Amino acid sequence: MTKIKVWDGFIRSFHWLLVIAMATLYFSAEEAMMELHFVAGFFTIALLATRLIWGFIGSKTAKLSALIHSPIKAFKSFTETDEKPGHGAAGSYMVIAFFGLLIVQLISGLMNSDSILIDGPLAEYVSSDTVDFAGWLHNINFDILFYAIVLHVVAIAIYSIKGKPLVKAMITGSKEQQSPTPAKSVTKAPWLAFAIFAVLLIVLMLTWGKEPLSYLFS
Ligand code: HEM
Ligand code: HEM
Image (cartoon, protein in one colour):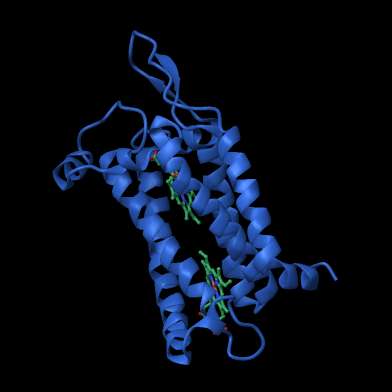
């Protein structure tokens, strides 16, 4: 058994920060804490945008091009084990679905309004019909996102029962592999990704975040 690093520090931080952000967004929406919802929303935009940029310039296992597999390979991946580091073929479809659902949720949120006190920062630039549509989409897309999360967690649990410790790899970054020769490194240092994230976060907070932040900290 040799240990190989599969997920760089940014991918792992992205994943667990996304989980925290999703919980915060759900909780804040339920409790009508819209300022917190907006700040968590802007945080998620910076996080996802960095992940997508990292999908071009990051580690081999972070590359968006590595997510493209034929549907046949995805079906086969349920029964055959693939020792290659990175997402399996079926998992890749799930990752693409998550990125799509998150983009729709974030963009619709920016145009959404609670019809009383607070409007998303793009709501003033679109017609009231578009704001209504964005509100409808934001609700319905969240339901789909919710079921995708449930499916994702169930799939990960099934893999764990079958003896594939995927969660450990998403926490530590490494997995054990049955290969006599040490594998070439597939990960990059995450610092550039963290720097991009910091810049995007600061820009978003300075443009759209000032009001909700000053409300939260007053
Ligand atoms: C809000 C809930 C969640 C969301 C939105 C989510 C989303 C994602 C996304 C987008 C990826 C792809 C990572 C990337 O390439 O950037 C991923 C992978 C992964 N997630 Fe989650 N996740 C959630 C909850 C969880 C939980 C609770 C667990 C653990 C029980 C988990 C375990 C994993 C694992 C192990 C992988 C790697 C799968 C693989 O090896 O291909 N996730 N998740
Ligand atoms: C992935 C990120 C997001 C998630 C998961 C999310 C989730 C939700 C949920 C579950 C609701 C409650 C829907 C309902 O009434 O049943 C909601 C409402 C809302 N969201 Fe988001 N949201 C996200 C991003 C955003 C962003 C970026 C903004 C704007 C900056 C935003 C603005 C709003 C507004 C204004 C409402 C209130 C709608 C109303 O009261 O009728 N959301 N969101």
